[in-house]
Image (cartoon, rainbow, N blue to C red; front, side, top):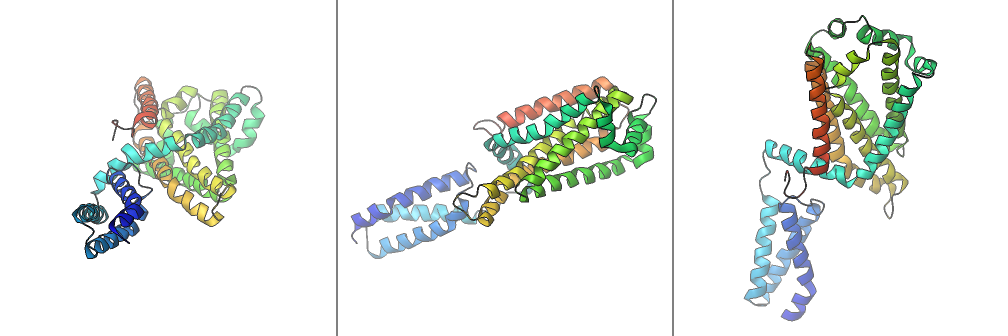
Length: 322
């Protein structure tokens, strides 16, 4: 093989390797990162062959430059935790969300439709709501949000300190996250069930308090953390649905291989959504139960909903949050 044939045969691979290196180094597309080590070995082989056969300085210099870039990319020191944390929340997570925005629509539909139906049914036929909640839940709701109830005092009696409230809520939220994501393994049926059930239950809760309690006490309590908790739940539901669809439509892969690929690609959604529900528990434990004016809580809640809208639509785009 002469120099011209050697260059014609391998030039496209060299160019692809160079493009992938730039993309990975800028954290623009990490999907090709796994193939870089094998391509780096091929570049080193081509370099040694070009030097051995004396194919000229131009080819050798190009391959040497690619080998150096590949070595630096593979062996570069990992960023500090803070840097990786920022990259995840300012780029990886919102980009993953936008890539799978259709799953967000599906997940939202599954949750919000039963939510509003149960809320509406409380004003038409309260028996539906009562049968879903049961006597124990209704008594608890009346004790916390009843017309004569003291929400803060009830929470203190029920859970004690702010930290104990936080621990209770994070246990509840993490449990729901596991159900939503793990349910995806059942071809998505588990995720659909838990999204639908949570929509029903939360809608029934709101409807029952409208019927038998003081709605203002509820809205005052949930205003601050509602965006984190509800959107986080829906995002984790997206991750679960992604697993389910990978099993329903594996394409050219085996179902096991398709599930493994979906597991990797759904990880940003799972981690991001779980972080949101975790932060919701923090707000719920240390802010929502505090005797703060309703107007302040409503204002903070509205700000959080608006910030979430801006975050998922704008952050992580080129030139914004990148």
